[in-house]
Length: 115
Length: 115
Image (cartoon, rainbow over all chains, first blue to last red; front, side, top):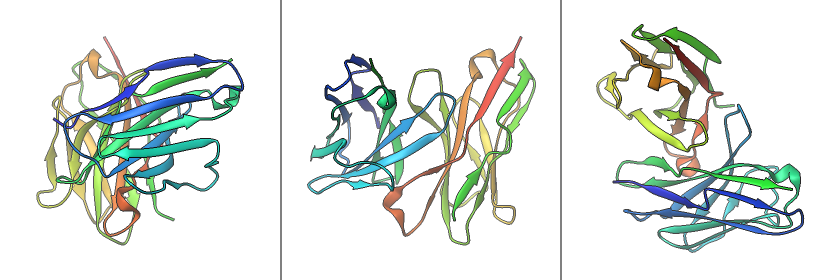
């Protein structure tokens, strides 16, 4: 139980295009999901908290107009990187909270490469 | 500011040897503590968590940890490591009563098991 999936697992796009990443909780409902960014050999940096049915809460320094988050249902949150640039290349990881145990379960990550 | 410190960035160890990965946190309030493992190009997998109760916590893959409130620590241990334990290990904390479940991560410890 408590499985979180992400799609796609990797994506390559041209500079200036937009990319959408999906995060799904497969066997539980999650009112809260999180989006993280991880650079090579570094820890996870929280980008935003995604709340079902309301606007996401962004961490300081994260551009909300560039990283659009939509939590449309209790099992799906999406992160759209708009007008992507090479510096947006990174590993993006989502997580979902299983409320019964107050524990975060992580997706497998999405590797984004912007050319 | 609240923080998590993993005292060792890299831990090399020989196969079948014991290992301890150290984690300290700063807090004056109650916390939940977690250890996650990350294999290359993958998301995070929960190893174990400390919520309350017994200070000795058993996790998956033969790992365990001991919570020490006075030293504000949750050190991760395994009595005999395998090559397959080579990975990045992250300690994380969430503070009860605030932040809506946000995790604060340590910098990570790279465990390298050699034959």
